[in-house]
Image 1 (cartoon, rainbow, N blue to C red):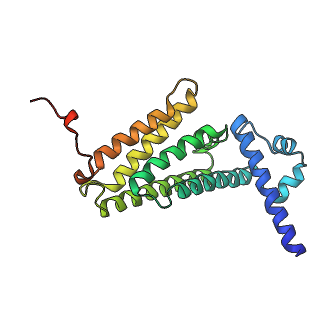
Image 2 (image 1 turned 60 degrees about the vertical axis):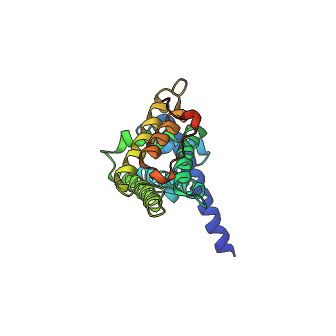
Image 3 (image 1 turned 90 degrees about the horizontal axis):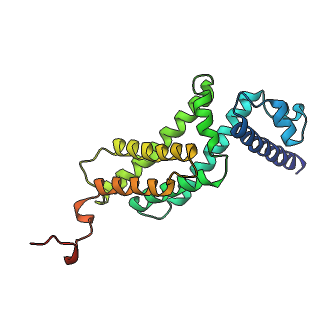
Length: 215
């Protein structure tokens, strides 16, 4: 029992340190964040950090892994029990909520720019995350094709890439101008247009007489 308790405390301490590191990296960037700064923010000694992590880059990799896991869990939960079209809409909402939640979502975007060429491990983590995200979307789209909801002549991989580009592009603009950029509306509009383009003709809503063109 004592060993199990120690493991739980160790895991909790590690998670707390990665959360504080994410906050520091978000505010000061990777280069501007030292182990000493993280230790000071956490109220611990540098030795306590080195007990869990080899160095600052090891802490960075753990922080990235935690943040990615959190996002992927939210996406998976949001898509349970719904059809592919609704799942694609929900993923968009998760992305918006995730970005609006606090300053931490800027963490991965900041690091993507700052470390993509200087830290191969983090760059590999981010590439793997984007590949998993596109694969998740591709699988949803393929399900929609199989169910007759989406057109059979579409390229699921290309649609997944287009979806990702639209949502991430909106997210970048939100980070640049959070006060004035219509983030949620932009994401919803992009997804609406994408769904309209790939929806199977038999799933299109019939036009009412009021919407019919005049003779």
